[in-house]
Image (cartoon, rainbow, N blue to C red; front, side, top):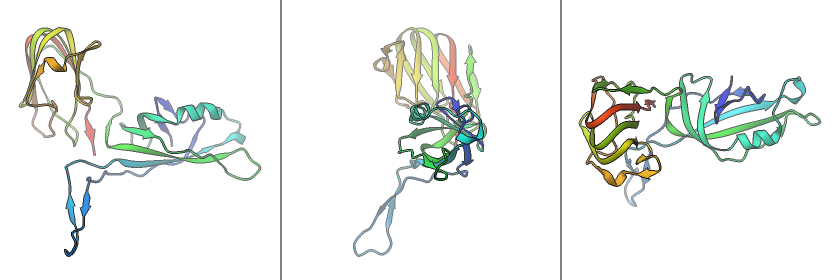
Length: 236
């Protein structure tokens, strides 16, 4: 058993995983409202999903003769926001934050072995561990294999005024200076260090790829020579 965090496997640092979290399906975000004089309760949902808590239990076997990273190295590693991978969820990664206190407790008095638990607070979806990259020079179709709407990262090699259409959603961007990136998850449109969000006209933001068995068409107009899309397929 192992986990990966910030691009480094637990095995690399000599961390032994004793327990991985079970498969968890996120719950719908729900607000409970109690009305005086009314039996039961009202529930309001906004369509969003709650984050998940995934706990990994670990052990540092200092007396086993193997390499274990120094505590200062582990402390610098086990923090922040990044991608989490779990050996019992192959092919998936989770956008997570590790901000809770980590306590390394002695396994037995008088020995240097340490046990600890890591609480990863994760976005409700799992994404491809190795993202799909689609590189195209002509219009094409794509089918979302996931169970959630995909928020892609799109790079266009283009100049001048262009327009991009995904399914029934479209966006027009004026004055593209050679290339432009549509960072749909981040809500940004830019070229190098220049923000081009003000050059865009659309009623369809965010420009997502819907779930479904039917292929979705992707096309463009204007002087566009190449389109690279990282769809960011995801699953509950």
